[in-house]
Amino acid sequence: MPEKPEFVVTPYEVRGRIDYERLRVQFGTQSIGPELKDRLRRLAGGELHPLLEREVYFSHRDLPWILDEHAKGRPFFLYSGRGPSGPLHTSHLVPFDLCRWLQERFGVPMYIQITDDEKYWLRPRLTREETARWARENLIDLLAVGFDPQRTHVFVDTRSIAALYPLAVDAAKRIPYSTAKAVFGFPPSTNIGLVFYTALQTAPSFYPSWVAGRPVPCLIPCGIDQDPHFRITRDIAESLGYPKPALLHSQMIPGLLGPDRVMSTTGEVAENAIFLNDPPKTVAKKIRHAFTGGRATVEEQRRLGATPEICSVWAAWRAKFAPRAEEFERITRDCRSGALLCGDCKEQLIERVTGFLAEHAERREKAAEWADSAIVERPPDGAPGPAQPTSGRASGPA
Ligand code: TRP
Image (cartoon, rainbow, N blue to C red; front, side, top):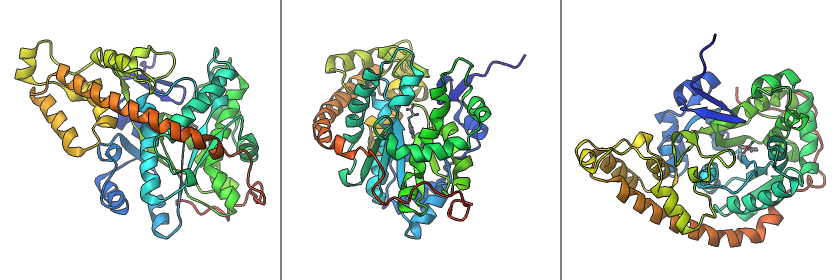
């Protein structure tokens, strides 16, 4: 009998303690080495986003090609997304924090896909009223990260279907059922909506090229769990006349209850994540109960130090709440040496998170004003229409 895997990562299941290096090799993606980091840092004006600096983003496909194109004056666009199954928590913002930074540094457009259909098909108990409501709520949260209203466009699948459908139709024709079944591990009871869905997640990668009538390079920052969708996208891109999208993959952010459980909206206890609408008392309670890498007693911790790598409080500092390098390094050092005790570290995080949530709530009000106008409902008049499947138009990565 084959051994039970210690971890599983697919778009529809993340389980176990993930060995990211093994996963990267298994998925066949590239690591983001020091040279690539340096090149990105230079192009971004001398600084790297902490998520890249700290290697929360640890893997890519064809990132150098995106940078080459950029250097030749051929701007790329960013694409990421969210399945609206409930309220957002802080780690849902990770890809969008990076996208916001990339948008600002490179001056590029951002496309966000809100997959209300996907989550409705996936979760037996979700109603369409609920997915519609979460689609709007989540969208406002994502825009509140600070995207440029002039350069940010949104697809909400059930509302944007006229824009996406021609591309999804072209994609679906080239994806055999056996591929969807093998890639996502669908059991026979899977509804046919979900079998088709990957064609819709592919569509935004091609949309700007389709509308412009020429290849526009696409960069997708996302959790590594989404890579299987985009392997399919990349496999069919050139036969449709589009360049393969490039990818930047992040680790899955561990929840508050420990390193083996990533933050998740559904199927998990609410204590595992900080939701963007948690009141300050709830935030304090959740963080005080969080799993840490601390020792059994204060005396032991002072003497031996703690282990940041397994600590969910440290994970929160790393991914979001200690953006300044000096502060993050100090926290890490003092944790390891025993100078910083878990109780104090938690109180500091509570204060930081509470402050962030208050500011976020304010930014949400501004974002709500332009959320509707960012939604793309149909392609612009005069769009050239479905691509002709010639290989000549794609000028993608080698
Ligand atoms: N499938 C993603 C989810 O479940 C949503 C999504 C759609 C997405 N398009 C994307 C995520 C592009 C990352 C990049 O949340």
